[in-house]
Length: 456
Image (tube, rainbow, N blue to C red):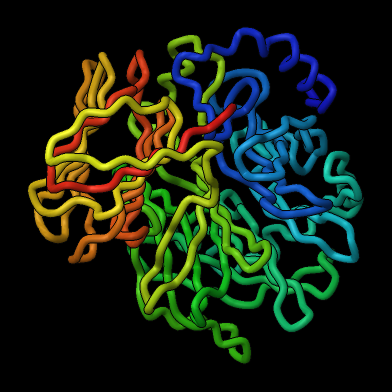
């Protein structure tokens, strides 16, 4: 059966009223109905920030992927728009998978993966082009696919060849694409003069355990005078799927990448598939947040939505150190002094900043009648994050630079993002408390707390 945009829109509109509010975030974007995963095609175009995303408009479980679409003026308030693309062509009939966007000659182009499953179960993935002059209605290139198995290097698996991130350098178009080559993840580089005709150039990153058995959602950009490759990875033996950032230098003469360092972009287990874009000199990153161990909890509990985006964050380099900070601000701001022990009511959706952070032995508890999230600085370089509720007990050590810096917490019903040490250490968490967190308890030296709330 061919799936169409019209059918998906009709179904979603008929069922949006069934979406439950119990765990639904206010300032983290979630689809109006159904499943959401990877952010796609992030871009600023015609006066709006655009967020396309992997979307099943027919239910709250992962299934045949469409591209959902929303736009915003401020990265906080999002306007849902019609579904951008459906799996309605032979080369993408089992899924319009992840991709990216670029503006060329005032036209918005997207490059995405078409996913096909043959009757015998054989999977084939190809890269395809579509364009739009209004960001809403897309035309798929009549000569798609523009990249297929023939353009893979030796040992490349056509079943694992996806997630193109397109960019420009020296007047030419390039794309980094994830692939499995000889059973292990790699990041491949492709080149084009016109976005329509592509050729394989080189493998930029390979032979790293962190690339997993399959790499996903690669990204490339320059920050602080260094080149960066960001990637997510499917790890063997059900190991946690983490997101890494490799810093180094891409030699454009030889098309090779010399890696100088490798580190997690986010130390949380619930952060995946981030994509970035640049606007007004800011490198803005949006990830997908999902509970890594209970991906289908919301679907199994009749919420009729599943998955949320992380808060947009700004990535910078300060004295050679990566920093991340929220790219949004609240509508109202309140500053208060905390005594050595203090209890405060907090909004369900808020940004909380502790000016001096936490010293060793100090802690913050975020409490709901049904559970608590605890943060405690256990050593000079370890912030321990714990979740306690009837559903689960989780514990995550966050490695922090020695020396205190501001601690910022983005709290939003079922999500918490931790920006410790002035954003040098970051971790994202999804949790399911039946009632919302509404109380902060602090134990430490006198400190200053700033609370930003949102008018949603």
